[in-house]
Length: 107
Image 1 (cartoon, rainbow, N blue to C red):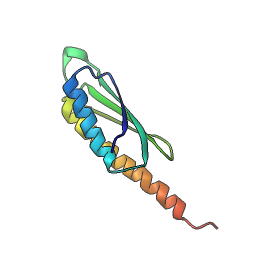
Image 2 (cartoon, one colour):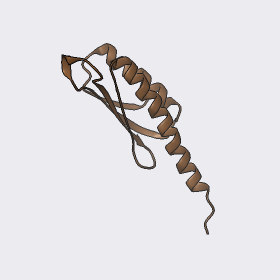
Image 3 (cartoon, rainbow, N blue to C red):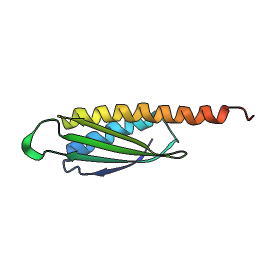
Image 4 (cartoon, helix red, strand yellow):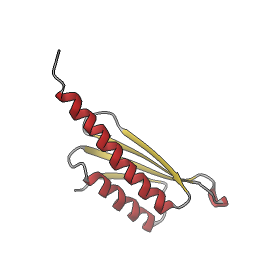
């Protein structure tokens, strides 16, 4: 399924492809439930090194509030993969809560 994935702060074509692939797979778990995702990649310390790669993702659902994930790490590719796993889990939890809240009987 194709999702609207908006990327910010990504200058490398290889890194861009990695983000599109990882986030696309994470969102494929929830077909028809996600409107779009904004992904921002930021190098906090520049060339100094250290734990300085930050991925900030905002998932806009068809119904409900957006899901926001932030992941930090040293390696950009690993940090993106970790963020994609967290996106999949967090969106699944949020969608599960929406379904459960609709099933509750009225009092």
